[in-house]
Image (cartoon, rainbow, N blue to C red; front, side, top):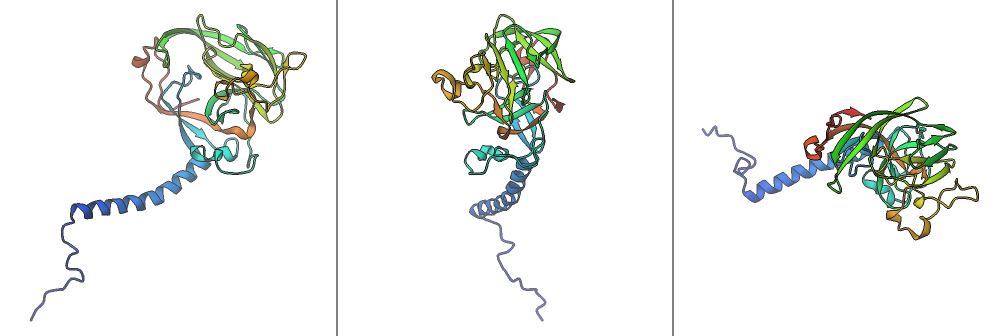
Length: 288
């Protein structure tokens, strides 16, 4: 009597060839990605996404190489909320869903007004604010200068040029919000004197590295001033034939906001590489 159990597939336990192994791995990866990618897109579109800091415009609070989490639901959702900047190509309507109002002092990620670039700056001017910018003077908001308190001097090697810079670090305070800024010795960031009145539905952004930031202070991305020297309109092309990628952000429409930068999750920034004296703040899991 034969008690052997027959197998429905005699080759089921046979060793896989290299080609078979590759096909199996590709199939498993395909199944994994088909599950993971939609979950990732939904999460990064509705909740949080990770952005990399490419420049020194937000020094000392953000360094080149910082990985920052962006809160997508803080201000609600617009077409710019789509991950990978897909909102540039998807014909979605203007406006926002579940809109939440930005606050002065927020560090926000937004779409540049003149080019398809993603920027990160600090909100200084809210709709209706009068913001006066004079070179060498504290920014004035609604008739009150931003309070500045000297903290220390720092020295570091700049990321783009490799040149050493010495900067004065200040604490700035206005209307209950406080943040740090840098003024680089011997460098003028604006060399202008302009009064801005922020239009409804728009915001005025500035970089914390006041002498190394192309931001809303610079008039190249704004409409022309009126006869009283006041800039209070939005939606114009860059001034005097300036190329869009060389123009400032101007007044940023609410719908261009992508989200609020909340936390430096981790970073490839190193004090030794920047030869910073003293060392900047730690770059892991640090709130903004």
